[in-house]
Amino acid sequence: MICKELEEKGHNVIGIDIAEKACLYGRKKLSIKTVNADLEKSIPFKNGCFDLIIATDVLEHLENDKKLIRECHTILNDSGILLITVPAYMHMWSQWDERLEHKRRYSCLNLKENIIQSDFKIMKSSYTNTALYPAAFIYRRLSKIFTPKNMNSKSSDFSVSSTRFLSIFFNVYFKLERQVMQFISLPFGLSIFIKAQKNG
Image (cartoon, rainbow, N blue to C red; front, side, top):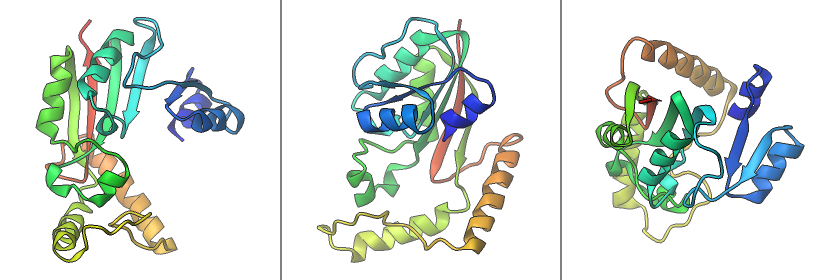
C-alpha cells in the first residue's frame, strides 16, 4: 500500500476512497487516516493543504476527469506535486476495462494537455510497463477476433499464473524500468506516469 509506505517514512498521509469498506480497512488494519468521498463531487479539503497528491489509476473511472485535476490544483500548496498513473491507449480497450468501469484510456499527449490546462507544469511524463505492451497488444487484437462478446470473466483478460520465477523477473524488470525512467521517457507501454507541479 502506497499510503502505508509513505506513512512509515514519516509523512502525514490521508487516503480517499468511495467505498466505506476500503476506508474502514485502511483505518483498522493499516492505521491510516482515510476519508470516504466521491471524487465525482467536491474533494472535502481546504485550499492549499497538501504538498503531494497521488492519483494511481483513478482518472479513468471518472466521468469528469478534468474536474478532479482542477480540484487537485486547488488543494495543493503553491509548489505542490501531482503524481498520476492511468491505463494507456484506447486501442487497448477490452471487456476488462468495462468490467472495471473505466470511462476511457489515455495517450500521454492528451493527458499532458489536460494537466497543463489546469495550470500545472509537467516535470516528467512517460509510458510504463513497456516490456509487456507487445504481448498484450497481440493478445487483445486476437481476443477481439476470437473471444465471444458476451464473455463475462472475473479475472483480467490478459493474465499469467504467478510463479516464483515470474515474480522475481517482474520485480527486477520494474525496478530496472524505474531506473531507466529517471533518465529517459519510455515511448510506449500499458500505462502512463505523469509528475506535475502546480504553477503557484
